[in-house]
Image (cartoon, rainbow, N blue to C red):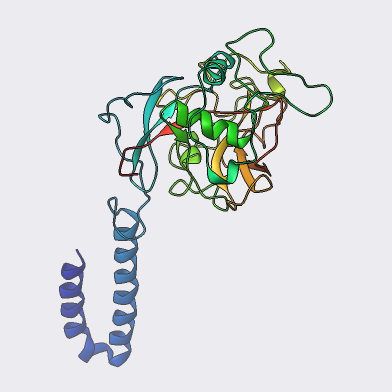
Length: 288
């Protein structure tokens, strides 16, 4: 297209130059430059994946199969904008699953978790007791970051990886990549709907069963990434000990619409235990 326009413009200039003088040539050159610029802009806008200016897309992970030798929640194959496929728990870790972890012995822990000598899910703040009374299908809460880390190792998985300072980057936060479907959704299901997930506007005021609420699902079928309970992730600012700040994601049953967005996070210390915070796990290939 651009070459054809050049030839036509040259013919026009040759015919018009002598009759209209140099000014016509100058005008033609200006028009040619504008046309060329427009053509280049269109090429960039319509570029395929990988070309300059093109939007990145999630990889197709549908043929990734199943994560092998894992315990706990079933997993879904998912991906991030770095082009990596991995697996994520379809639901939060439940009270029943966490009790099996505590009873069955503990897996490896991180060096900076040496201070964590108890895995019992007990909250220290007034008004909260041991998580687990009642319905064992509820998400486990009152677990600190190191509890969640050790549970995921015991289950043959790990906490979902990311960078503390890039919680809304789908190439640097795996949790966000899945929740936002590659940074194209503010909420896991699409545009905000007050009762799609268990947040403040749903009016329940407490956690619901892990794996419930089909209306609060990503396209891959991952549930409750928004609301219900907040989730620990491996997005920490340091690796020194109990006082390290780490992100929890997704909001919880008392969160408003803003706090339920996929890009939101709350930073709390690694040793914090709250009755609104739980976790889920991810699994990665051996090379990751």
